[in-house]
Image: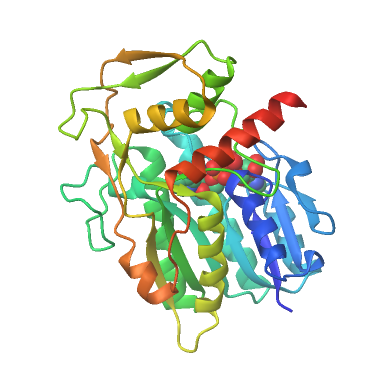
Length: 328
Ligand SMILES: NC(=O)c1ccc[n+]([C@@H]2O[C@H](COP(=O)([O-])OP(=O)(O)OC[C@H]3O[C@@H](n4cnc5c(N)ncnc54)[C@H](O)[C@@H]3O)[C@@H](O)[C@H]2O)c1
């Protein structure tokens, strides 16, 4: 069985993917998680998985993983992902999301590993003038976070052409939901669903809606919310694609294709939790596009991937997780 290195595998999407791979029959002993634990949770990982605490910015640490283990494929989640912070401290994002990634690619070359699945983002599209967003939509990021992900996508294209490193770039829309007894635990938390549910739980006093005068069905922003286990499944399928003959590089949007507004998230959360809570109507935030919805057609066709979970299931699973978390 091929050995899989998961960078950032102790983080939210990474740890769910590790559990998902094990549920699909991958031996835990064939999985190597490399994470500096800046945001990760080591206790999220299933037993038997190798855990290496290390930083991709330290070449010696990542080189050692490849020289000591016969890694066949990499899933690269490790990055910083706070859009707002990237506008204040772009260097931190270019360093961790590009330079650290380059260290990884060079370590792969030294270790004769030529397969990588990369976590990209819908933030590479910026404020598109079409909806839904297909892979043909021009990528024009509007913040250093999105730019850093786009730059690394381009680096992967060159490494595919010049070094025959095969890559699948997965552009996630809004990751959410929970499974395998773990869930979203970012600090600080900036994602809407955990913020809403923590308000329902009484941990936060209120939740803010930023902008209610957009040209959308109810005036609030529309996003494409995709369950983290659907994302995990796409990584599993991407690894199969990397194994196909003559494959070099490709990229896919990962979303449901269904737009859900901020007001709909709040209403569904109130329905599922049975709790009422305070919602504050604030002005628009700079740089928030009115609508970001994926066209997942290419992933349907080429990856045989399709999202399984709807917004009710997402919120139910996240609510179960919030309750477990608070109960501990
Ligand atoms: N959460 C989303 O909605 C979303 C959407 C689009 C793309 N993404 C991308 O998916 C990936 C995972 O996101 P997440 O929400 O799970 O974030 P996360 O912060 O929970 O996970 C990232 C992990 O990487 C680790 N890490 C960061 N820098 C590192 C380094 N230099 N060396 C080793 N480990 C390092 C962190 O400790 C953390 O465990 C990121 O690349 C992010 O940009 C996330």
